[in-house]
Amino acid sequence: MNIGLSNILKANFPDTTLVPKPHVYRTNSFDPFWISEFVISEDNFRIFIKKDTTKIGFSLRLKFQITQYSWNVVLIKNFIKYFSYGRIK
Image (spheres, rainbow, N blue to C red):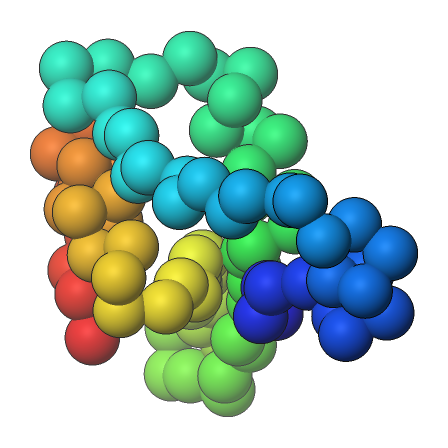
């Protein structure tokens, strides 16, 4: 979690000016390579196997989940728009 500079760094670099990092999101499209790098560190993929009465005797459920802090809701909404699929829970 980014909570700013430590006291040691503040003491050693007293003239440092903190600059807020802006949240910039593309709303029209995403670079697929950026998405793949993003989800490598932020995702969760699950496969659920359940006994069933189908011909093969089981069913599969696939789940892909990206977890983010609430301030990134715009990013997640843009993912949903980009993929035309998903929900915020």
